Image (spheres, rainbow, N blue to C red):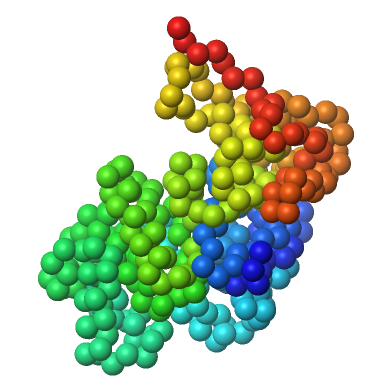
Length: 334
């Protein structure tokens, strides 16, 4: 890999203190290079969003954060608030899951965009107004000048998401973290938002972290994929390799649950059980209670890292050959 823009090493996040504490993220080590697109996938409760909120210092005070997050070699964990404020929005921007709850309902869109431009780029009011208009045009909002005077409740969900993307681009960030950017949008608007993110990356060269439950969205929009389960990273690989030759049983289970567009109809595979609560995770492999090939050692011993090539690694006790699925697929219907 190229020199990383952001390097996360041994990141751990605990909520609460003492015996009542719950570990939401456990020892995540991950890198993203300048201009790269990284997908982060996993079920709800896997720690995908918490990892990046912790990296930016956006978690509440009750969160105990350990480990290292470096931006261009400079540590963010434990950094002064003044330094973090210079990073957020300017170097690293984030699009949150629900744009309607992130936009201020009592201020017009133009005012909110202008505030971001004045804060991150030091523009005066006239220059900020002109740049806000350009940003709305860039994200594909029609009649942008009129929309600057609208309030968030006057816009649809898709338009609010475009405004959030415009605000994220206002600081000209090196890294954009898109946390479920197409949640609650219909398929047409979803495709438009993803096309917009692709075009922005192509035009600006920024890196992107795409957090999503939708494996199809991730497959089409990233260079590399990290699979998380119960606070741990279980598999990491280039996108093409992960979707064609998954190695971890959990990754294989996620892909086996997807319908096939070609061939006969079949009943989808369902991974039994649910993601464990942070305070009650198994001692060894956290996926062991749901894994079809787990044995007694999986439940008590932490799994080792297995490297399949330079960029493809899995954390599992079993050496599963790439492309061989441990899940039995139901037969296709006649």
